[in-house]
Image (tube, rainbow, N blue to C red; front, side):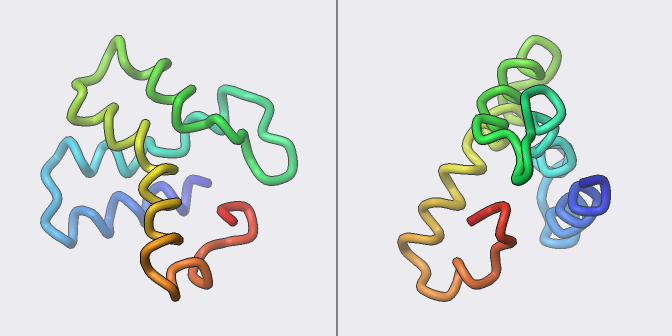
Length: 91
């Protein structure tokens, strides 16, 4: 999970994302640590993370965290090859 968080944040930074988006990328899966992760992670991790982080971080950080699962679902529905790039846990 740490490696994934660091890779995601680095990718956003390399793509020119601002500091808030880099922080969101770093923390986007922290919700897995809050709920019952089971074998494939905590299904509601995006919402849990947004609720947990919301009191301390700006909406410009929290909103991308809250929306990243919906964004992934959109990509699966709109980009035919995107699903093949996902891990089994993401699928």
